[in-house]
Length: 632
Image 1 (cartoon, helix red, strand yellow):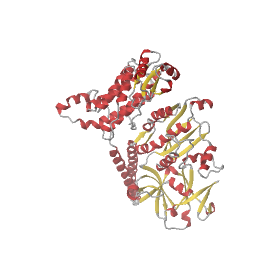
Image 2 (cartoon, one colour):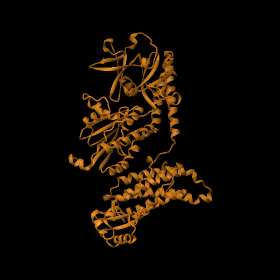
Image 3 (tube, one colour):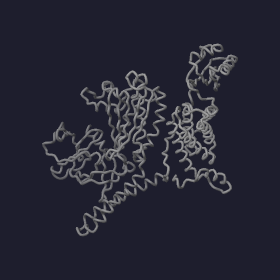
Image 4 (cartoon, rainbow, N blue to C red):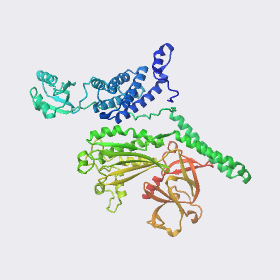
């Protein structure tokens, strides 16, 4: 919501108080509340992840408190009692933390993060997403206990779950509880639900070691009946992707933005038609229109760039989901990992952002699981115990490059070759390093020693490459065994309008994405070499490139003489090059991409279609598919 349009603090509550007497229907404000609540929860999570319990500053604690307070106020206004109750408990704890009545702790941060997840689930249900209401009773009890100073472990103390039994002697249990109240060295004990199976569970806060705890309890309970484990907090509720928090903006529905983009695309097509029609006029008429046409082209280009920028979103929207995931996954696997982000302000088309999130998520999980070593392994290798994972985004030419690199163990060439041979893949020792690293993208390929709930089933990396290729992108790997690896994802800036080179093949026109065009050249017959029955190579300087004939792929009739075939366009994608034979180069222009699938379904080797200046339809070729076609 634009700050100039945002009501002053407290206005919503005042409106709510008078809504009954004024007959105001609060439902009309629901959308704004849900959007602002999502922003506040996203900011709350980000601030909590940045909070260092040992050196928490007042401003950060106040900012976290304000986020919870804003959500509580709106929820109470609209009658969402469950949201208001949970945020009130969070607010009470946060108020004591910011007033320094309690010291921040890792346990408090974890519980507040879980409460944020539960709030997202509650809000999604109030928005009509369905599903059962999350059970917040344990969260509420934990927040209240922390606020009262009962649940937090002091430095050197641990939270444990003590299981006793099977046991039927109630006197022994009562004596055990009395022991924890009376012996201050032991700590405190809180009975948990259970007992029907003869097992009795307690939440224990103590500074004792496991053996000391058993010795202290042995007077009441046989040590063989005691089981001690770290206390497990409630599993987090399903979490929505955090929304972007943009102050000073005007919210516009996405369908309106898409309609604007489509209209601009039609304007680009109409301007191209006008330019082509002007070229057919007499020279005198062309002279009169040329200045006006040049001005129209300039303004059309500026309008198109402005319209496209509306859909551009910073990649920080994607990066923001990884600190929480990394924190939880690293703790689960007993690893220490530090996440660094660079270039978060780099912008990418909204449609691209939505489709790149899952591949990046898999790459991050894969890096933590396979790449970063355990603290013991890193010490043995002479590395710091804490591994480093870096996410960086940058613009390079007409593309955006997202790089994920770690300082872990890297890929082992010999291990990859051995695994490939186990799977009967073509893996001779003569493969280059780049070809060996590319083996991890083979379907079903995995280097994991065992299957876990994180990885090891051989699915993921092939899907990552497939999804990125579907966006017109490519994946590159740089590796140093024992030192780490980097995965670079190269993507076009947008999927709506692309710079293209228009070519003619047997009377038909095709568009090649300009980002994939390396060079064009004319060739002599002696530069061609035929392999087998139909395969051809063309010599370009000191290299031979496979030749792809579009005329044969699209089954077009032959036209003209042999001299018409003397143009080659070199295309590059996924680190490989091919030469495409065409009859004529028609020029470079921006084209509006139209999706064919809703009308005619998927078409092999075609990424989409466009309308040219003369009103004819031209197919936009899929360079990645052409490369795969040349290989096979």
